[in-house]
Image (cartoon, rainbow, N blue to C red; front, side, top):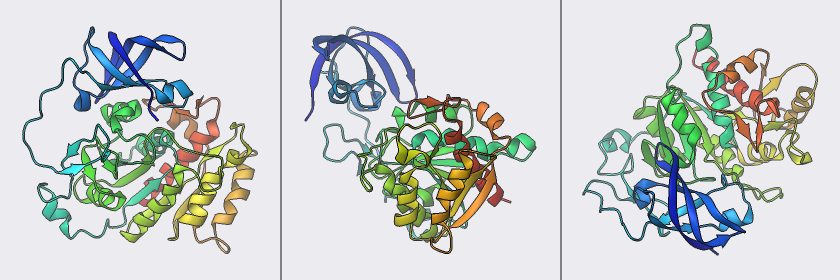
Length: 368
C-alpha cells in the first residue's frame, strides 16, 4: 500500500507557511530517479536540514498522481523533534495514521471560544461560496474583491478547507500567499483537514467559527488541493460540495454555488458545466442555493447557461443568478498567486476562473 524510500537531504529548495521543500538523494531509485523533490511539514516531523537522513513515502510519485510531484517526508529518524510543550487541545486529526496530530479544536472544552460556540446555531445570513476545486479559491476571492477596486471596502473572508483533498492546509502554497497578501482574514480546517488558524470538527462548526470567532463577512469553502475522481457519476470527492451548501443553509447562511466550468478540458463530462457540479448541486444539495451562472457572448457561455437550467426552477430547486463576466479578466490578473486548474492557467482555460470569479461577485453583492 505504501512505497518507502530512504534518502539524504541535499538542499532546502524553499519554504512557505508550514512546509519545507527539499532536494533529496535517494538510497534506492524510485521510478528510475535517484534524486527527488520532497515536502516536509516541520510541525509533524521536525525541521529538516542538509545532510539529514529522511524516510520518504513515494507511492503517489511512482504512480504519477497529481500531488505536486513530491515525495513526502515521514520522519527524520536520526534527529527526532522534541516533544511539544504541554498545552490544551485533544482533537486528533488524520486519526489513527502514523502522523496524527493532536490539536486544539476551536469549540472544544479547553478552547477560549468554547462558551461562544457552545450554543451557536446561526451564521446570520453570511454568504458561503462553495466550489468543487481548490483552484477556484483565488478566483472567487478576485471576484469578491472586484468591488474593492471600485472603492468599496474589501470584505473579511474566511477560508474553510474541507478534507476531500489534501489534509494539511500547509500543502497549499496558494493559501500561504493569499494570507500574506491580505486576501484572506483567517483559515479554518474542517473534518480531518488540519493546520488552519482554527480547527473544526466538521463543516458546520467551521462555518460557525468563521462567523462567531473570525468575524468573517463571507466564507469561501473548498476541499484542499488534490481532487479525487474516478470517472463515475458519484465517485468524486467534490460530492461534498452539495453537503456544504446544505450546512450553510441549515445554519442560516446564504449558500452560493460556484459552477465548475471549462472550455478546455479534453474530457467531455467536464466541458461547459462539469458533471461534478450538476451532481453535487443537483442531487446532493437539498436546500435551495444561489447557483451563479456566468454569462457572456458566445461559447462557452451559451452552453453553460443551457446546462445550468436543470439546476433551477421549475425542475430544480435552486435560484439561478446570472452574473456577467465582462471585466473580470482584469480582476483575475490581479491575483497574487498564479491561477491554475488541472494544469491549465488563465490563458489556457479562462472560463474556469471567470466562472469562479462570478460567484465571488455575487457574494459581494449579497453583502450590500
